[in-house]
Length: 338
Length: 260
Image (cartoon, rainbow over all chains, first blue to last red):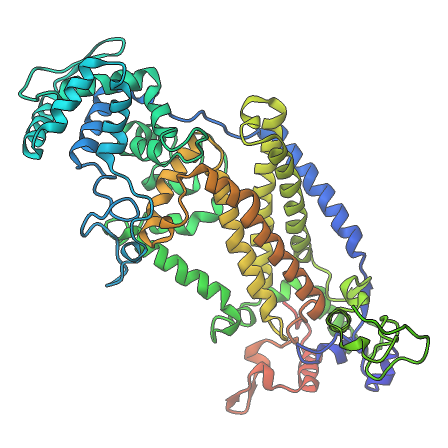
């Protein structure tokens, strides 16, 4: 296009630069091989990714098993298992989606989306983590079968007494050898027999298998073993040493010195500051804040003030500095060249 | 399907020459013909695959969009290899670990490029000129990509995935999402990671690119002078938009260094 045909005395760049934002660009253009750029970019990024892979590889710390937990720290394992049986563990009192514990669901103001969603992944910690695995084991262990029958036939009050008494002496227990954990005698009925069997199952790896494959032969759902592991302190202690705890910005970190999910920095940050780091509704509040911020980001073009920031902060002058120089040069020279 | 016989006669009214619509009266009403016409109107080939760009498209910041797409290509390619061999392969094979590493680092690069692209577009106010949908689809790509990466982290079948899943469950459960999206269910997470979320990311990236091609690259802001020297007219401050282009140009002409 001939510049002089547009506006006499003005270059096409000057004319185009003054057009509205939604107008087709009528100013000077440059050669731009889009597909070549894409191909070069793919090759460069692929080489970069391969280079980083060769240099730094990727982390792959083996998963924690219940067997590792019970053999390394039988006291913590048994304490957790008793809490699962007497219904005082974190999962047993979690609320939806695992169970319907009253008042456990988190809220944002008066609204509890957790409660509204309901119990969709039902977990009965006593049955799922303790009694059902023991019942499987009891098929080949008559002594355990008797203990389970006695426990099942007892009134719930008596069960509670046995569990409480066993818990009290559990702290005085000690590891006495491979797969053995001695607990002082107390008025705890069949409970010591049950938990000795559960510990033996865990030490042999049978409890891992039982919790994973309890639904079908082909198991892909690890909800039960993960919840059980998370109720103990063994998994958390391992995470702590790997700088993965919640107060260590753990959500965005990963094992080793890898960058992890750095893009979760804002989400993770809220957990470090008040009031979120002390609120019982911290998770729901953080999610609420992040949902709001995401919505704001999505709607930036529609929000007066926010959408004006780029015009007020002159970063654009750096981005388009060549364009503005050309524009100035055109004007100063009074020529038609772009 | 039509039962009319094609003819070489002149195209019916309303048909676009060269688009295959110059056949028989009535053909142009077919759904296929209508969609083709709409596609040709919206994105003619020279707009879809242009070989020239406005002269202002000359900054390194423009590279980060295509670098993000390039990283996505590497993510998908390495992900296909990992999918081909199954989720356990990379734990027991050095080659598998290598491909997992490529997958991991291409994801890190993807987010690095995408965040720079996002900030670049923010400071260009790239939603101007009927380009708001382009911004919105870009943000959707960013948010869904976070979900895709997250499900990848919890599908690793290692300690990282155990810990991340058991921690993340609380946030998801607290707002009811965990009731339907169980991060402790490896099978569910793996399928979201290799099928559902990548499909959404790819769909929105495709839509984003088509919108960029349709509307073109956003124009630079109008050149403006230094506020203290040139934006005061008498007692009133004149906003940039109120200045006629001739006045802007005059101002520029007066200013020895108008572009800072």
